Image (cartoon, rainbow, N blue to C red; front, side):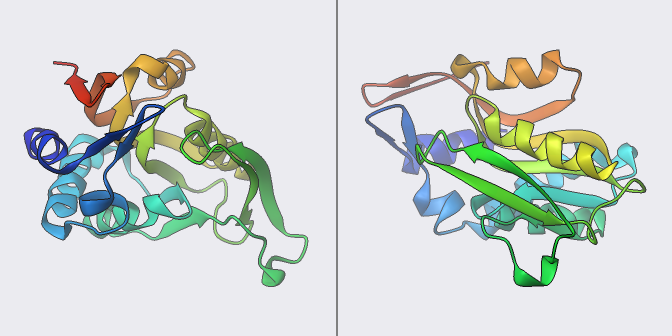
Length: 190
């Protein structure tokens, strides 16, 4: 997607450790017009999939997911990083290790918001080693829901997470793929 690629080149920063800082337009301050175009693009790619829910992880994926859900006319479910008391013992949970933040935590989804009748589209801002996406797949499958596909804004293809997700049989649509990141440089896949 040219608009996202151009915005990355114009506004993103490459930080040590292969971190791409997109705070100014994607995951802290949000360029709503850009995110709307991204959501529309994912809708066009997945509109035949009969999506009933959009699934993401708290917190950066929520804004993207909300815009995507608007196009599909479905609710957003997000895995929470803390267990809500209202869940009782009626929840799915799993352990996550965040590539970006370098920390581990558990995520939770109430059993009341996702079930075997759902066809979910997984949405996230980044895909690095694939751990967050695998967690979403695990939570969806634990509920009995069908994963119809995954939508990612920026895939760091050099880390192999996208290859892993595709190799286990899931459709993954990334709007931008980065094949190299470092020394202040961003090199995109064609």
